[in-house]
Every structure is written in C-alpha cells, then in structure tokens.
Amino acid sequence: MQNAMGDELNDAQAELVKAYRTIEDVLRNRAEELAPYEARNATKALAALWQVMNGLDMEPGQLYELGA
Amino acid sequence: MPTDLVGAPMTDTPYWNPRHETMPREQLEALQVRRLRALVEWADARVPWQSKRLRDAGVTADSIKTLEDLRRIPLLSRDEWMGAQLESPPFGAILAAPEEAAIRYHMTSGTTGRTPIRVLDSLKDWEWIAEMWCYGFWGFGVRPRDRVFIAFGYATFIGFWGAHYACEKMGCLVLPGGAMTTDVRVRTIVEMGATVVCSTPTYALRMAQEARSLGIDLASSSVERLILSGEPAGSIPATKKLIEEQWGAKAADTAGMTELGTIMVFECSEQPGGTHIIEDHYIEEVVDPDTDEPVPYGEMGERVVTSFGRGFIPVLRYRTRDYVVKVPANTCSCGRTFDIYDGGIRGRVDDMKLVRGTNVYPRAVEAIVREFPEIDEFQIHLYTAEGIRDEIEVLVEIPGSDEEADADRIVNDLSRSLAQAHEGLRFGVRRAESGSLPRFELKAKRLLDERIVIGTEGERRQA
Image 1 (cartoon, each protein chain N blue to C red):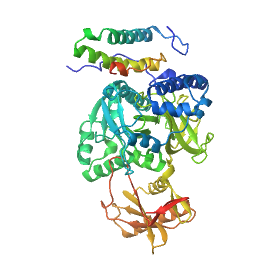
Image 2 (cartoon, rainbow over the protein chains, first blue to last red):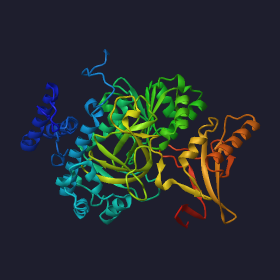
Image 3 (tube, rainbow over the protein chains, first blue to last red):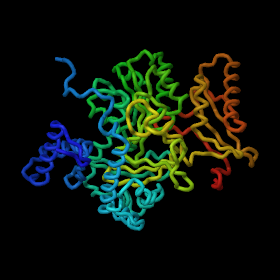
Image 4 (cartoon, rainbow over the protein chains, first blue to last red):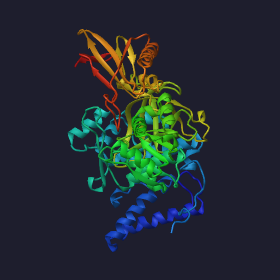
C-alpha cells in the first residue's frame, strides 16, 4: 500500500489504515445498527486513528459529518 | 499487582513522527503544497467568508502549484477575524463545520483587554491539538514513564489543555494542577514525584520562590524537565538559565495560540537556543510588518501562519504580530529538518514602546533583569513626568538582600546595564517591598503604561 506521496507503507501501517477505513465505513453506512456506546466509542477511535492517517499522508479529509 | 510498564513496545526514537520530522526539505515542501491545496479547497467549499476572500484574490485550490502561490492568499488580521465574529456572534462566519459537531469551546486569554476570540473544536481537532503537543513533549525527551504536573487553571483559556491530553496520549501519568494555591502545587510536585512540570516561565519562577519560602529544595526533587509556554520568556537565555538553576532541571520553550488551538513550535532536547516549527502541520512565513514582503533567514520579521490541522476553523495566512527570526534546521544537531525560530518568539510587533526616541521592548528589559538572580519580581513602569516628559522606571523586589549596600549595588548595576542596552536611555530603578508586585499564573503582564500620551512611533494618541 502506498500513501499520497508515493511512499510504501509497511505491513503494520497498512493494517492501521485498514482498521481506520473499516471503522469509517461502519460509521458512514451502518451507524443505525450501533448502540450509543458503540457509535460514540467508534467515533472517538476514528478521531484518534485520523491522526495516524494524516501522519502517514493518506489524506483522510474531514470527519465532521460523522461527529468526529 | 504492579509489574513492569504495560503497553505495546515502540521504536525508540527521539522523534514523535520520525518520517516527517526528518523528511528532506524538498519532500517536506511538496507535502506542504498538497496540504495547502486541500486546505484552500476545504475553506473555499465550507466557509463563504473565506471563499469570498480567496475568490477576490483569484485563488482556487487548483491554482496552488508551489509554495510561492501561498503569497497570493490575502493576509488575515486579528481585526478581520474579530470583525467576522462581531458581525455574527458568538463565533462569526469562520466555522467550516456545524456548531453541533463541536465538543469544546475556548477563547483567548484576554490579557490585552480586547474582546476575546472564541473557538470551537471537534473530537478530531482535539486529537490533533494533543498531537502537536506530543511533538514537543516527545522531542524534549518526555516518555510514558514520566509523571507530568500541569500547573494550569483548566478553564476557558485553552492554555495547557492540549498538553494534558498529549501526556495522556503518550501514556504519562498526568497530575492536573488546577484550582490549587502555589504552595499546594509545589508540595504536590514533590510528594507525587513529578518528573515533568508544565507552566508559564513566570509561574515556574513563582513556584521556585514559593518552594524556597517553604524550605523545599526543588533542585533535589525528582523534576527533570520543565515544559514552558505562554510567554516569550521561555527562550530568553537569562530567564531560562534562572529557571533551570532554581529547579535543577532542563527547561524547554514552546509557543502556541488560541487561534490555532495548540502549539506550533517546540524546543528539542538538543536545546539549540530556539524552537523548531512543526512544518508538516503549518507553513510559517516571516514578513516585514510594514511592507508584508518576506524577510530572509536570520532577519527579524512578523510570523504569518497557515495551519493544516484544525478543520473547524481554517487558518490561512494569519498575521500573528509576533516577532521572530527564522534560521535553517541544520543550525540544530537533532536531525530534524524543521526550521527554527532562533530565540523563540522575540516579542510582539505592538509591544514596542517609544521612550524619548528610544525603542524599548519588554522582553529585552526582562533579559537584563534576569541577569540579576537576586531580583525576585519586577515591573516596568512608564509614566509622564511634569506633564510632558516620558519616563521609564523598573521596580524590583530583592528579598534576600540583608545588607542595604548589596541592594543598592544591584539597583545601580541594573540601571547601568539597562541604559547601556538602550542607547543611554535613563532607567529609574527602584526597590519595591517584597511581595508587593503582582504575581502571575498565566501570561505575565509586567509593563504598566501610565503615560498621558502613549503609543509607539507613528501611532501616538491621547490616552
């Protein structure tokens, strides 16, 4: 997996990117299936993982519409 | 049952983000261009007030090709920001996200007496605010094993809030020092075995003073590091030396702004005499405050900041009124490629006082006063004598002086040093009773201007 600058990510970094995308996808598309504690804790985790995405130059955009 | 430290083992590195902090300049600038383009696109799409300013200047995201294009974006002043806020209170037309997306409200400290700037941040923004502090803490050698005491009031001023969360994020044990008297803070630092203390430079000296009166020797405490912020004094060599001596610990300067939500510069463990700019998250320009033209490395100018981090309030080319001198990263041996503000924040463009034709900067006066460790506290007093003449005096507390002759010598020496550093300008230096001058927990305000006619050159007005 490469970042926006064309650098190759290592396997551990790539796994974190996948985790972020999985959480983001669930919150965008399946939030109504989540209890409040699930949704808000996942949102908090997404906000933290956004820093990883940003630091890896994956250009994650903004998350305000998800409450993050 | 307590065992060894828990937590995932990490790479041992002096850098919080090793790849960015050591990135070759060419790549770093390419990263800044990408991020600038995204920021312009975001501001243009979400903040009509910003969009109009950008469009009026002919700036679109697509038109950003190099860092030179940054200069096509109009400078933003505090007055403009404030104007937008007053037009549409309480926050103004500056928000890029709905207020409901925010989780926290803060405002500027208001030491200038002006209406404060009010800001909102979301969950992600707060994680980012802490992230910037992590660059500073980690870069100065703070690690998860540390116990960090934060001497701060924890209220609407944003201050050290981000530092608190950064330390939690790093895995440190945080000792929050809000709503405590100074003596309780000092005792807590010692009793809890704090290894790191966060405060303003002024308050670090105040705590050391309190420790002496309590018979506590801070130099023999477990404190190894101080993280200073909130005032330029953290980079004034004499003040810093005094703090380090009194605490028996290393002190690092940082600087931030409510307008950004967090710090934008930090001093690394090599202590190069300045602060590294966090250049993967900011573009920091230095311009001539009169012409707005960029000034080269090594020359003093005004900081202009563009921030990539806080999406809630996009900040593009905000003129800070801070004086700085930028020097290349390689003037520090730490290996970072982030440029440095030599001497940290040198002062404020609007701080300068004109006294009988001589420029006087409060920071320069402090640097000289701090060369006299016997002086506990001081205040600069400007007044009008005989209704016509500007006078400047410095009031000093010299509590440890048993002999009157010693105090007289300090007063005379200080008066001479101040005059020599200010083209012969006569400074009245007067002793004040111990404990009579104001003490400060946050931003110190040691200049009292009571002149009938006040102001700086070209801007004199009736008080």
